[in-house]
Each structure stands twice: as structure tokens, then as C-alpha cells.
Length: 136
Image (cartoon, rainbow, N blue to C red; front, side):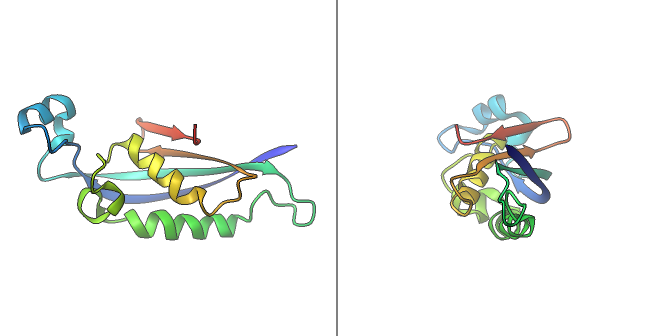
């Protein structure tokens, strides 16, 4: 029997969607307002889900306190109140789209969570726009 345990979190961050090899006109054509050279921000909502067998000794799939602490150290401390393009090393050469952000978060958390557990990340950039990644 597999059970999914989830933890919600949030962070606020600024970013600019653009490709440095394109001129401003092409960046604006492709990325619209999100290509503002002065950046723009989002209140990101995050749901981290871990799925696996219930441990017979503890009754946990994963200790939620451990999951909470991992989210704080790997995501919130790294991204909250930051300019993703400038202050987060993972985005130095990677366009910080919601799709790329969710994959970066998954990779940061995956290395700390047992491979016997499935990991899925849902990232809301706005209440209506969200992405999901589970390592596929």
C-alpha cells in the first residue's frame, strides 16, 4: 500500500524571462511582459509530495518535519526574496521559467530523499498557472 504525503510552502522571488542571445524585441515578442529588463515578481506556492510504503515501525512514509526542513533549506532559503536570474546559481545560464524552476527544485530535493520514495513537485507561479514535475 502506497501513500502520498505532501507539504505546502511558498517563496517570493523576482525573475526575467529572456535569452541573452536575442535582442530585446525578440525577447518581448516571445516572453511578453515577463521579459521586462527591470524584472518582475511572483508569490510562488509549492507542493512537495512524497509517495511510498508506510514504514511499519514509524507509521510514516516520510517524517513531515524532515520534509519541511528540506524545503526550507533547499528551496525557501535559496529562492525566497531573491532575484532568480542574479542571485540563484542554478539560473546563471538557465532561463527561470516555471518549467525550469520546478525541475531545479525537484533536483535539489531528490538528492536528500530516499530513492525508494517517489517525488513530485507542483509549483504555482500564479493561482491559475502551475507546473508539475516528477522526474520523468
